[in-house]
Image 1 (spheres, rainbow, N blue to C red):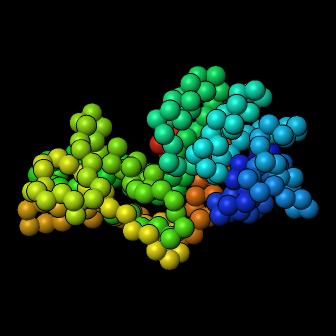
Image 2: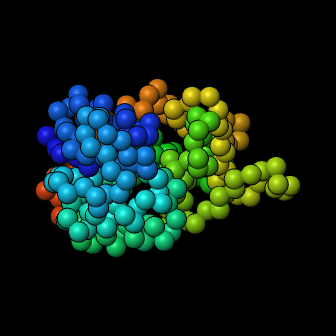
Image 3: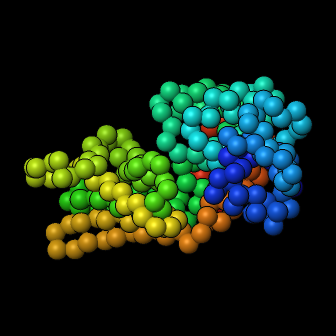
Length: 249
């Protein structure tokens, strides 16, 4: 059982994680949210520094702009952190990397085990099919999602371009030219209540291979985040990813 300080507790994923923790026997000892409330199952604060109790781990499902305050709390109290937020700037990611030199940090733009298996399969497909197959990524999410493309789409693209620095193209209506060899197209759909869908298309001469992942509920991400919480237990300082967790299973 882990005692968790949950940042972003009032959001969709925060609520999903709190529900998953109740089922798993883990405990939310306090929450952090831009709209602190009273009378709930745990106290909610506006900032992590306002919490004076003890937590085994910080889990962040808030907003990338809150990263600085979260890392400051984690560093001050030497508390491991699971960062599950997307949309970070390079400056924020640099803060993350520097903090990981002092405390264990688990960072992933997608906490689903299935998505991370999809990424491994995409790497294998790209290695097998080679440069003769063009790659296009289509991601779909609900109409309230703020960032586009999704962090998961970028995770997939980054995995496929490792060591090659392949160019990403996000908006083809402004690209009146023949598709360049090696580029990766990334397309975003926003609508309704779609939890998360990702299709990775490998298009070659006379054949197409599509690898897909679809999340039916936010529970899959909450469950993955709790796996990350327990994975960090007794880990030394360092930056860990969902691939590390998958490899440990």
